[in-house]
Amino acid sequence: MAISASTLDLVAARAGEARGNRRIADDVVQAVSADGFFRHFTPSAHAGLQAPPQDFFLDQITLAEADMSTAWALGIVAVHNFQIALLDPRAQDEVWASGPDGMASSSYNPVGAVAQAVEGGVMLSGRWGWSSGSLHCNWVLLGGVIPEEGYRTFLVPATDYRIDDTWHTMGLQGTGSNDIVIDTPVFVPDYRTHRQLDGFLGVHHQPAGYYDLPWAQVFIRVVNTSAIGAVRHAIALFRDRIGLGTTDMTKTATDPDVLGRIARASELVETCAKVMVRNFEEMEAAGWKPSILDRVRYRYEASLVADRCIEAMDLLMDIAGGRSVFSGNAFQDLWHDVRMARAHVANNPAGFARNYAAVMMGADNADMFI
Image 1 (cartoon, one colour):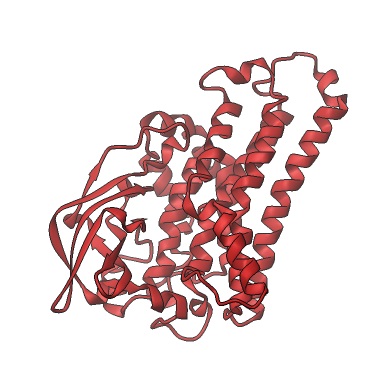
Image 2 (cartoon, helix red, strand yellow):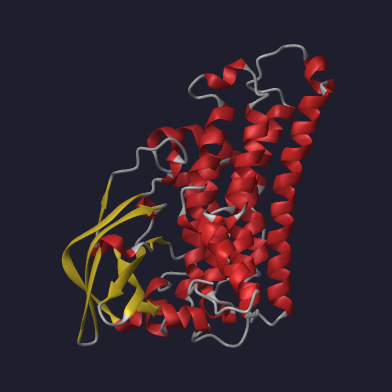
């Protein structure tokens, strides 16, 4: 599967509108859906593509070369179909009742959640932030902690929650990552929940195959891979001289500092892309059951992407010229977008580095989301 040229042109053309409206245009979502992006992880039993993860993330990078907000938000929405495929078949039937392109947003941080176990399920209420693409979805996956049990994810239909318009940010404005609010507790049946331990152990209801892969290994990539495409976009803008403060086309093209910075920026992001593909190829070679040591390494390597993309954007911004300081400049927008990715908890490498090193030294793994 690949994103069509016509869709990429539409994404690029509507990027400014998405930033201003703080949401992706509906016709962009429809075009991306028509290309099969949302059915990538949908099981073949539900008419999905069930295609390899590395192919999906290469498509997400390509989308981000046109607009990072679109790639970020729709990538997150699309990747949820992997987690939904792990749930009880009744939950899958509900999400994909009208076809394989089911769309769910998420907010996994349980800090604002109240979850109480009852007969047959859980009563859930609270507020959750950063639900990217939620305005386009009819389901949401929400994180919560059940007292004396632990963390679960809850699949909730749009009829049971409201969206609070809170997304006023310095970057990634088009993602529309607003708050999800459940004011009055709603009942979520057990079959529409996903226990953290099940995700860690790879428990699912699919035939043997890539759904054996721990859910975390898929999700941790979706919140940083789009930054790779954004840096590629910035390099393309530089190549095309958009937004630069000089009109001397030969001076910049022969300046060794400029050329060195472009080369280093490109090397940083292309290495990130290669590591991502290599890691999924290793997982595939291991029958989608990587070792604990490899799992903690993959999570650590994924967490480095945002920092490396920020380094690449800083290299380019320093030579982008005087026009880059003005609001609405393309370089400045991309610089802010990439920095926004670093705010996601999965893109802070400190704790993942410690866990990786500790496991290498013989300690027990301390991370359940690997």
